[in-house]
Length: 459
Image 1: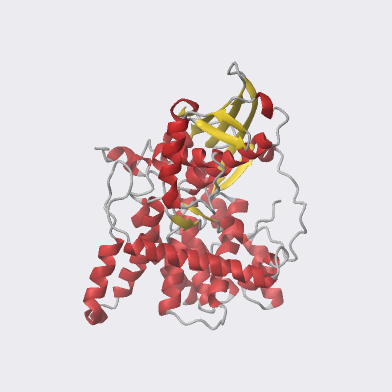
Image 2: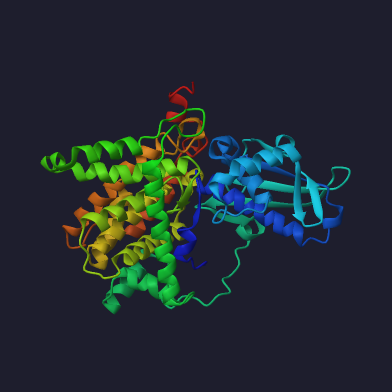
């Protein structure tokens, strides 16, 4: 079984979608690397790419075409500069060539060589891509099939069919289930975050782990700040107006009078989540947590915690992120974090579960209370569909992040009010989420063919 690092689940990339933007960019970049080291490189004259299933159905709205072009241009999600993207894409459309190496250019005309018309998925996952390098006569010289499996993860066909056994040192405290994770915490009388930290320290020195956690938090805070200061409409056919800036202004104007309303704190949490989600929808810099469509939830709850809560831990922010990542790993291993695979319960549902557990940890909850919070966070998102209007990560996704951030906080509060004893174990809920996702009709799984996507006419 693959041992995931939390830094694979919290990756820094760009919006609007981890599976439809970040994943395809990584896949295209991998194909470029493959060609660079290919013995057939001299005979390659052009490159083609075909997208299948959900990537074809909602690819234009998610910027999948742009992401693939960027990957073929040698860009990667964590380093690409969002404001340079329009210029790079315009040049590619104009020149219709790609530099594979310094002295090797090949033909690539986006309008001709990038095909998003195959709605029938490939056999292994709803998000499939076929890259082909062609010779003089247009005959294929080399090809590769990649799948974007959720949260920005990419696997080749071979990797999905024959997963490699991990060659790296196994973790000192490996766990396949929440039950194992709880047992280890109970035996060691330590918080869950300490178990996750011990595993991360098997891959990097502790100071580096903490530095990377700081970078994740800094990037999250930056996306909240950028989202709160930007104005105008979000890209795409719906022309949805951004509202975080106006929302913030009205909250600041009310000032002390907000103290009359005991729930005014919710307005701030909504603001943080909406700010990040709008930044994501606009293609800005974002931390995948565990996906981009659900990226507003963990930062909103952590920002709330740092501003309004008190923690017994000096490294409370690190413990929050370690716990959130540790819970995300359970979903990645035992279910799915792909909207095209299990619907939005695998994105917003998982993020809600992560944030609930993380907040309970931040507040000093016992391992059992933390596990209970995670369970409550998912239990009330079971069956959540993924049906964005016009295939854009905007309606209902932006508001859904705000609702789920509040739900996560409530889940943590309910768990903290109890002893940690509860009927439904987290492992059972993760299993149920997967079963529910498998049973869900494909029109509710990021195909823009059901739900709100068809009941609200695209004007």
